Amino acid sequence: MNTVTRPRILVVGAGFAGVECVRRLERKLSPDEADVTLVTPFAYQLYLPLLPQVASGVLTPQSIAVSLRRSKKYRTRIIPGGAIGVDLKSKVCVIRTITDQIVNEPYDYIVLAPGSITRTFDIPGLTDHAFGMKTLAEAAYIRDHVISQLDLADASQDPVERASRLQFVVVGGGYAGTETAACLQRLTHAAVKRYPRLDPGLIKWHLIDIAPKLMPELGEKLGSSAQEILRRRGIEISLGVSIAKAGPEEVTFTDGRVIPTRTLIWTAGVVASPLIATLGAETVKGRLAVAPEMNLPGNDGVFALGDSAAVPDLAKGDGAMCPPTAQHALRQGRHVADNVIASLRGGPMRPYVHKDLGLVVDLGGTDAVSKPLGIELRGVPAQAVARGYHWSALRTNVAKTRVMTNWLLNAVAGDDFVRTGFQARKAARLKDFEYTDAYLTPEQVRAHVEGTARQE
Ligand SMILES: Cc1cc2nc3c(=O)[nH]c(=O)nc-3n(C[C@H](O)[C@H](O)[C@H](O)COP(=O)(O)OP(=O)(O)OC[C@H]3O[C@@H](n4cnc5c(N)ncnc54)[C@H](O)[C@@H]3O)c2cc1C
Image (cartoon, rainbow, N blue to C red; front, top):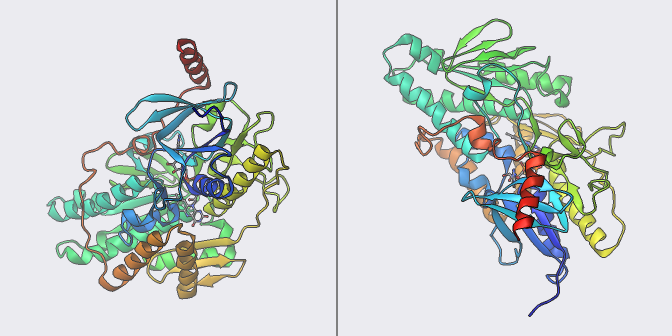
């Protein structure tokens, strides 16, 4: 009988941060040194920056779902489910499996990388009528939904219904919202040619943001170029404007305009996963307040990173936090693995430092703006950098091949505008896709863990 107990490392979340961490732990730790377990609701790592291309049909959903079981070398034990609470005192993570069983997973080290969810505000009707762009299911749903609006408008004899089905509103002028509006506008622009009864002039995309500029991180000139590209393509940009009210058939803007529409896409920022609140620990704007080494001060063996953690941005200084980007999350993933190993072996941990490499924004086709290492690019060179960057960041060669093949096929043959109907008539609110109701309160976590300990 094996009586040796190895330290248990539990990684929560298989996104950019979690997967990089797990792969590094597998590479650097011998199997005898520690047991590594990963909790994840899905059997893939989602390459989120390419979601707008799934929504617009340039890529198939599978091409950006990178397998967690591609290689025999991957030896991490995977628990299919979501963490719904963490009890720091007894070092137990409470998990709801994909079959709704609640299980307790004890750990010696925990790495929290559950990412973020769509940030919402207290706006009447918003959470009932808006779609997000954070999960693969949402991207696939929105694609079907947009195509179904064209199908239904085409079939309708009612001009009022037609008009409302052919207007689309995207809220959020960050890169996620801008890319989403740009890519979907290309979809409807190309698709309408297959609907001879529809007047293309009726199709209208709105991109709105409460901020005075789109993607301020691009700077004045490049930001204006992005706006110019979108305006040229007929996307109506409204800045300093948000949503006052959302309903099933219309949306009211804060400037008083009422837009008849059945499509409200909400990409106005993200907040840390609700899992973080279950710890009852200190947070900064909802993200777990961690040290530059990404450990939680005062709690041995607890680490957090990526979108869910407020990691000090030492390269920027001035008390800045690392922005919630994939660029940081994946580097933090590797770095946190090194720090977990250091603390396991009794070595020193290192603070995380990374200077931002810039931003790439794919607006579809040959339209793009990019700012790699501060160099401002537009058009084809910007698109080459954007696609080259994403392509090289995909983890496996199979994923790279799928994405490249999809890009080539789409460039040559275009889109078929197939509406799959896989998710038709299913609940499609933000909470239905992002499972925000699944989490326990800190008190419920404690009571649950104590209750199960008493029964054992
Ligand atoms: C449309 C879009 C475009 C973007 N474009 C860019 C870009 O161009 N460049 C860039 O740098 N960044 C971009 N980002 C941001 C980037 O994707 C995120 O910052 C990055 O994914 C954060 O990595 P993460 O590992 O913290 O979280 P994620 O990658 O979101 O991973 C979190 C993982 O945890 C899982 N999970 C969630 N809750 C639980 C739970 N309770 N238990 C277990 N698992 C859980 C999720 O299923 C997911 O797999 C974009 C984001 C979006 C939405």
